[in-house]
Amino acid sequence: MYDYVAGKSDWMAAGLPTQGEASGRPTAATVARRDVPTCRLEESLRDVRERVRAAGWDACVVVNEARIVMGLLRVEELGRKEDLTAESAMRPGPSTFRPHVPIAEMAEFMATHDLPNVPVTTSEGELIGLLRLEEARSAAG
Image (cartoon, rainbow, N blue to C red; front, top):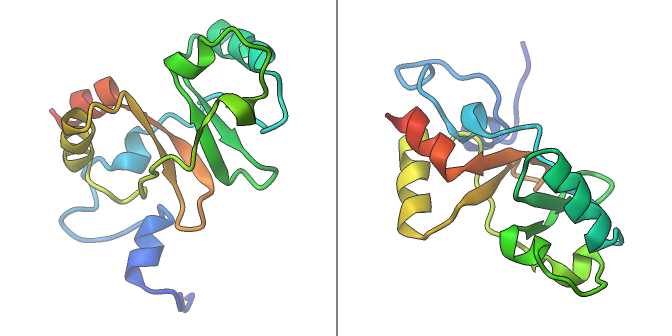
């Protein structure tokens, strides 16, 4: 047995297993793509763009050495032609979402706010994955 001091909300925010009637329902963590490309602040936007497109993605999460989300590069930022670093081009401090949020709630929020994708993180800001709107809608049914 483990005495988890931080509490139930933090436990769920960390994406740890739960019990009860909602335990089998899809959440942000179960649908988020963990294979999302990441890059560091100092990387060349040109290099990042080539790597992201080669992998078939249109977004990249900018993280530090501990995988803490620092920013987000979406289509608009990746398409910039200037010789920039990821830090100069990124959307700094993007809104992030916790893994335990029900996928139907995520799909509705993303559609309402016209968000094509959102990072899913732990309560400490560590990247879990990127949730894409079309995948959230599909999982929400």
